[in-house]
Length: 165
Image (cartoon, rainbow, N blue to C red):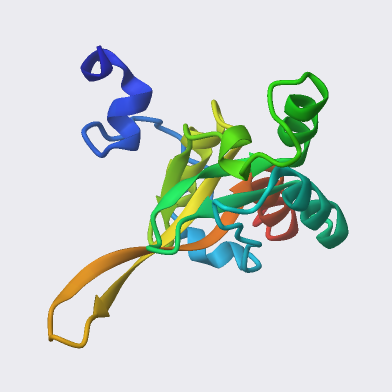
C-alpha cells in the first residue's frame, strides 16, 4: 500500500511536494546545516559499552554501521537503557539488539524542504553521501557514507539563526 501513501511517495521521489507558499529555506541544501560528524558504533559493540560511550561523549543517538559501510540502524540512549531495564536486552548483547532498523536517509544535496517532510513523522534522519570506492583489482562501486544525523532541532536552529524576515 506504499504507492498510495503520499509521505512514502514524496520521500522516494515519486511525488513532488505541492506546498504553494514555501518558506525561504525550503530549497536550501541539507549540507548548509553544517552538521558535526556523527559518532558511529560498530554492530559488535555491547549494549553496555554503547550506553557508556553515548553517555561519555554526550550523544543521544548514534548510527550503527557495519565494517562494510552498510547502515544497520540507529541506537538511542533512551531505547538502549529502556530495553536493558525491561529485560528485553542484556548488557552483554550486541548493540544491534536495541537498534532501530526503520530510519530515513537524506542526502547532502537534498533540500531542507524534503528534510522537513521527513521530520514531520520521524525523530531524525541519517544524512548520507555517496562515495565511489575502488578496490585493488580495479573494480569500483558506490558506497553510502554516514555524514551526520539531523533532527528537527537542527533544522529549527538553522532557520531561527538565518531567518530572512
